[in-house]
Amino acid sequence: MNTMLRKSVLGVAGLAFAGGLAAGPLHATAAHAAPAQVQPVAVAVQADKPDSGKLIPHGVQGAQSRIDLDDEQVANAEAIIAATKKAGLPERAAVISIATSLQESKLENLGHLGDRNDHDSLGLFQQRPSSGWGTPEQITDPQYSTTAFLKGLKQVDGWQDMPLTDAAQTVQVSAYPDAYAQWEQQAADLVAQHWNN
Image 1 (cartoon, rainbow, N blue to C red):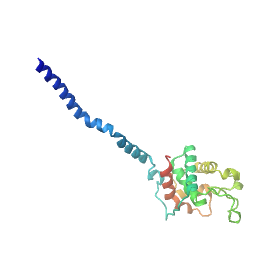
Image 2: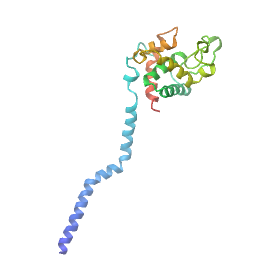
Image 3: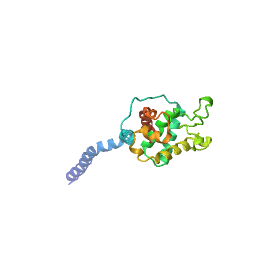
Image 4: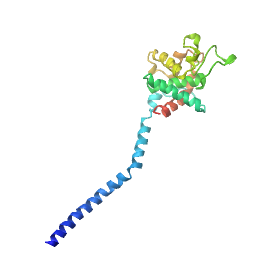
């Protein structure tokens, strides 16, 4: 009887041991899962970046320009993205807005430039108080100026399906209507990088 009891205990212990082996890697995986779980989270964030099909649905037009941005210019791009999201508009609207600002001011919130000023143009989008865009104080506020630009963009029928330069030109009425296209790739890169920040 003592031998049978001993075999039963060993049998249970053996099952527990065997179960431990089967569960061991699972427990070991769980114990080491923190680094493994961090990677899928990073991949998920990567996957949440807008894809180029949303950002540049027609492909870029013509030769592309690119400038190095300082912290203030990046902050202005982020302000444009934040205003676009607040307005409930998609990533493409942010690309159009940032490309427009890159052309108009190189993403610099410009005040009056004296003799170098284009009439009374101010701010990120070089909007003019005399054309009804707002007061100089409003136009030089990135949130306000972006919202004003987006309001104009929303009034353009089919802006979502237009080439960037056509959508931007319809709002801005620039003397250089094709100039916006050169900034599409850099604008799309900025939106992809900062949309989910």
